[in-house]
Image (tube, rainbow, N blue to C red):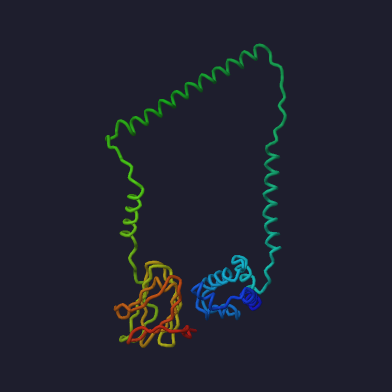
Length: 290
């Protein structure tokens, strides 16, 4: 089913006379990833990135991006996407609402009221009782008003210091909140070392200002994959080298043995690098990390 889904993407591109290079230029997605999508290979990155690539690809070739994401989800399950099933589920959701409305109408029904003739003395007693209730309600309302007034007087007027608070302009409040957030922003805290090699090993520090995904190969033998959240960092040791795939590379900073590396990237861009004792090198294709 995934191959059929990939063929639908490729057919739409060819039908609109669009090349893979044009899609890559417009979406900033590496052309190798676009080729993997059309070949039915959806395991080259985590599903979060795959869905983002499918959405951008669909928009460029004139497909409904939300519909294509639903078809991708169905293809992963090995079934064909069926729009009529979703419509049937919507009908099932409407039926309980209709039954609830009917139940409310039945509850709203009230039994008819029956009248009976009162004698003169019964009418007089009823009138007196009604007048007594009205007097009690008026007296109770007056007491409540007086009580509220006293509470306001003692709480705000009598104990008030006479200080008048002036209203600050919106721009000034926004500036103060921004400065307060910058002052209270959590400082990056080490999350610990996950792989320890020899005492003379290399120490790689990874810091991020936004959510980033990292997959790393240590000394060509040990692989690790993790997600860093905003304003966090991770220390990793290796003996000889690192090979790394970095997602959202614009938010990532790298240090080797406490010395900053010249690593640059863009928001939502995936970068491939190799690091050893001589420094950092960019790779033109993803490293083989299993």
